[in-house]
Image (cartoon, rainbow, N blue to C red; front, side, top):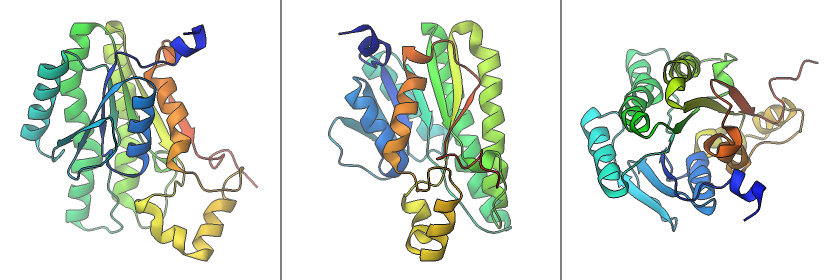
Length: 243
């Protein structure tokens, strides 16, 4: 194995990716497997990808999260990487949509990070990757809860990076742009919306889940050993585009 191969290798690492049964999470989890990691998918629905270990779990349940972490630690003895990927979007100002979005997009990553951090502290190493969004920087119309909690998740990551850096634990944000997934399929299938979102980017195209894999492996691997508390946007140049 060459120096570069070793730098980006996840061999021997144990990773958790929430919501890895489809879309961005599935692509990231599969990339981690191919990089050598043992990968657990914590989700409510099962995937059929070979090499990814499925644990059924409602991430809004503290009890189920605790059971999942206990199972992984009993089986593997360690947790090296956590990717808080699972998310929902609700387009209204209702109390229920606000509460549901908070539970999945902010509280669950907080609770799961807290559980995993105890084991990372014992090992004196670890990487937490929170999947944020363009909406952690920009407001899109009619989606207040998603914008609010993705912004809060971005700042939670920075708090974790500061508080646990002395334990050699890193925390970073990976922010997708418009990626073709089930969450964005309505815009994808609308010709006008599809074109408008494509033209927002510098690269003049939508993203695909596989576009996130390289950045995720970078943040999970030794290649980013001195990177923490940062925001990496995989958005095709959306955020940098002025006129």
